[in-house]
Length: 493
Picture 1 (spheres, rainbow, N blue to C red):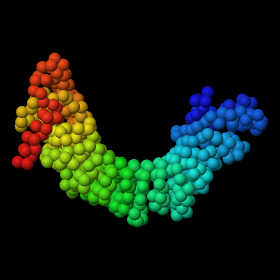
Picture 2: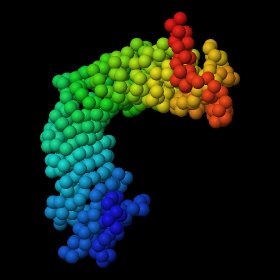
Picture 3: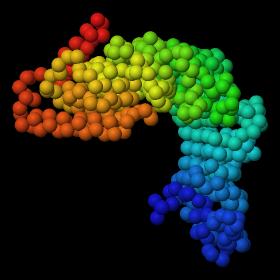
Picture 4: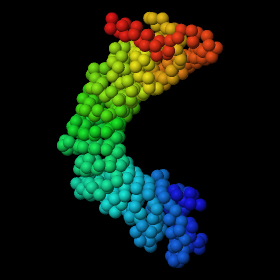
């Protein structure tokens, strides 16, 4: 019974524990099937105790999808009857996208507060109530607020900042309101581990020290990217492990190219310089939000290894995701990246030109580019590059024996009639290939993966029979390194 009541998805569920003669069901509107439960009379003291008995079991109010749930006037009546902390004494999580009564925040020592789609008329009430649960809060999530001009006022920002100063246990923050003052106060929290800033605009350029922060995510409009640069330059996060930046296209202003066109490769190059001092970084993402008829990319700058060089000093980098950028990489670039990041396990670099045909063939890497990563990055399991599987056979002979590796390989283009030795190389490095973007031929992908699977099964059968797999005495990595040495000499030539 207690388990059933741990998560409450609708306050009507609580009200309905009262006797039927107290309750009345009222239709909310003619075009909605949902009805609202109201009181026909006030409950007796014994009936109030029955309701409190069930409310005591609730650990979480989870009303993400119920915009009407907290609008029930019966809930206000219930909360007025119970003093602070006596209605939901064990409540630790509150999630809502509705008109939230601020008094609900004062009902218990909340640990997790997650709100979205809160109307501007109620945001100020929520800010006023935040100090009442500030000492116990560990998570704040405020997203997609329907805010008017008042939401950006200095007074509202000050209220939020004052509440933050009392949050001694806060570890995770996701805020979609632009409160530069609040960001300054967040940097004083020694407990903060994860910070997500949506709709980033600007912040004072004084040094921001986040002593315990391990994860930082920033959503920023394209026009505000210049304001982000000094923030990153002055960011001090000695244990930061993951940094993700998501440039956003302002879809409401697509008619003005200045609002949704940026030299993103050049922006990225500057950003990488500004974050190169974050020596503990293990994951970096620069993922652009766009759609085909409004690409935010200006192709005046091209992403290559020279632009990525500021990250080469981060030897612990394990994940790198760069999307929707103009890319021109070479075999030498692939070798440089593999040498720089021995801990790499996920690499995704997608060319903006690969999303919509045609893609210039001189911007596609040959399949040989996989070999440096296979050789020097033993933890690699996911690789997405602007690769082309061409018809031509490999320039060097491929040894017959090494145990297959299971890289999740993403490419851009497949030519018909791929050479057998290329298929054998792919079979030993991955279980199959995936074509990224819309350019790829689905039939060619299926045909190539069928050949890869056939070769893998044949070699696995040969290994089980103890045939050629044990005769040479060479390990997988010895053979790959040997092949990689030949490719490296070819690049230098």
